Length: 271
Image (cartoon, rainbow, N blue to C red):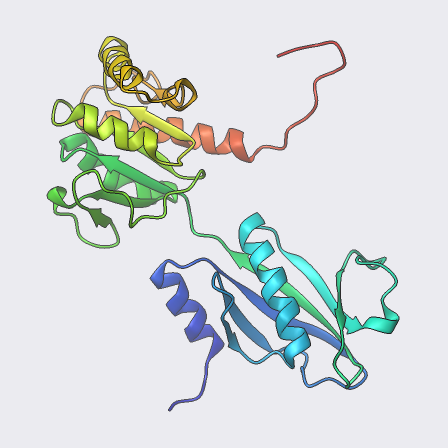
């Protein structure tokens, strides 16, 4: 077995598309088995790939790693003997974890999450879907598209309208570009997904007719209200690549708005 290389491990996890974080020992005090500079990758399942020290450090890293993957925020944690802990956050902002290890040492670790880029899920084996799949990676998006499009990696293929293997989340985007082929089934699957942003390449009239059928079938109104149709910004787009660019421009706009810090409105005013 070859020598363990943390950077090879990080590269493998990135290529596999798995969320993880990197834990680095930045400082130690007193006696510890951890050494400054040691690194490990912590997977979403809590697996620690690399050596960071004893069980107390590992338990803290698993907890902090899961929180960092969920929030996407880098954090500094400190593992120190229970008798020295007076608060769960030290004066320098480090999150404190109690250690019961007999060595009695203190370990500071930097926890840096790697979050997967948002995913663009496409419905429809159409020229617009193909154009979107071509341009989306340039906007920093992962792409999932119907297998019928026949696209090569890194596009992830799925069959029919089954998104169960994609782990779609609220940060992802879904675009229905079916254009007459199983429109209702595609739209139902899109709105059944957890994605916060769903758009459809269709006229308002067509989208209204389709969503009315979904409402009659029992789909909740708040789920239907997530639909934006026609998809994209109005830039006068005509051909598939222009339409794709208008849709991606809208996604970039949404992503910027979602990432912007929210400020409270002055008292007595409403948006």
